[in-house]
Amino acid sequence: IYYFLSHSFSELDLAMSVGCVEMIDAHSAGVVYTRNPVVADDNCLIISSIFGLGRYLVDGLLTPDEIKIDRDSGQVQETHIATKPVQLALDKNSGTIEIPVPIDLQNEISISPEQIVELTKFALQIEEYYGTPQDLEWVINREGDLKILQTRPLRIIETDTSSSLPPDTNLERIAEGGETVCPGAAHGRIFHVTSPENLISVPRGTILVVPHSFPGLVTVMERVSAMIVEVGGVASHMATLAREYGLPTITGMKITEKLKQGSDATVDANNCVIYKGFAEEIIKSRKNKGGLFEDMPIIQLLKRILDKISPLTLINPTSSKFVIENCITLHDITRFSHQKAMSEMFRSAGELQGNSEFTHQLRTKIPLKVNVMLIGNQAKDYLGDKWIEDSNIPSAPMAAFWSGILEQKWPSTHSQSQDDKFSTIPTKTNSSRKKISFEESSFAVISREYMVISLHLGYHFTSVEAMCTDIAGKNYIRMQHKGGGATRDRRILRVHVIETILSNLGFTNASRGDFLDTSVGYQDKETLLEKLKLLGRMIMCTKQLDMALTNETLAKWHSDDIMRKLGIEQHKENTIDYFD
Image (tube, rainbow, N blue to C red; front, side):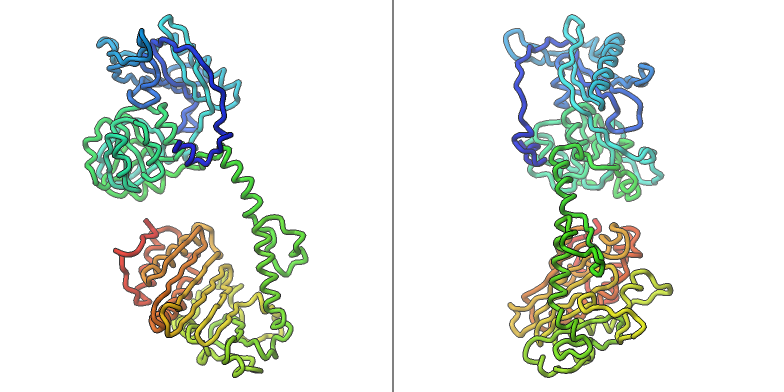
């Protein structure tokens, strides 16, 4: 039920027929993977086998024998024989019963060479029929006859071959051994669980250590960073689920007593090694190539829906193609509606630009064109004036915000970047330049106690709205930030830098990708005015920062450096680490 709900299946997706079949009295049973599920370019077939019925294998209660076979030649490449002390057998009366495996067979292989050849041949024929790698369950009865119980598509995890190489690290190895269930690497604190009843207490981000698979493990796979299983194989249901969740997992590691509860560790599931402490270089080099759920019906449906929502084709508002008939996606509709709303809002201002009684330009040393509309009683004091001086802005929040921008100054570079070429607009009109329409400029709407400013800073947009009155319950600041000229990963790092800084100023942050929505409120006027000034300084400090952010370490350094420059005290105990 948890799997059904967490994967957003519909009831129709689970519809299936019910078959009544004879229970086979098994001599041995197991699973065949016609490809290696964790090494895509490994040209082998994998047989997992135990004595008796296969339930103890798929439930992860026994470590199975494992045979790797070359798909082309049919030759056995590797054989690992496990100790199999018990088996599940048919009860003469009804159901099943656990019985011991004879001592002389416990460390013997549970499938004969002839049966390996026959099983390999059938498995490859089934794969050829379905045209995709298969996950088969099989059984050999007491008479030695092979039966195929079921088959289903096998998900293959695509990993970079180089990521399987042993890392060059000086970190201490706590434990090693076992088999890779799902490749990858993760860091966290060790947390031991011995029964399903303890799963509710598993903290988020921990490395889960269990003696064997048991019901309910799937309920914590989304919140743990890695999993270590002492007994089990790569063909169990637990292993299949771990690969679906992309959870770095090792099974068959029988030295878990070395993993102390609460100790800090890094799991390298590719090489089945656990290191003491945080191994950053290992984690970065152990990333899988793609999503594991791409073939699921719900993901395919969401992709088709996303194609109608996300792409943006209406980009240039001055193009003749920027018309409602060319709106293809919901993003296009939003973009078109926003642009036309802006155009209509400033239509009169655009017609009268230069001699309007109601719209003005901000005269400032900053090379940024800002159009200003005054609302409220003080608007009449500026009738007919073209300019508003940045030293005499008739709005307390706007004056505080702009004073921060002036104090920090416009960021300078030795070579002008593309971001600068678009954002550096002369304050005064130059007849040799193409005239920039009102709605394409940065703009502000202000009154004595209120401001909303939309800054068009090259490839990114920042809007700030604020109310500063003598009543703390009415006061707030809200900022939204989106975009940038760098690659998406660097834009996201800039958002994390901004979040880190603002969280130390008491802002509440909500981000998704390179979009940030942040706010603070219910504070006295003077406190908010000071925060607006710091906000203006911070915007200047981070204007082109996305171009420089190549990794999280550098981003964290910049966030610390900017807070030091702005005199912002870090409150680590009350703020989120956005680089963790």
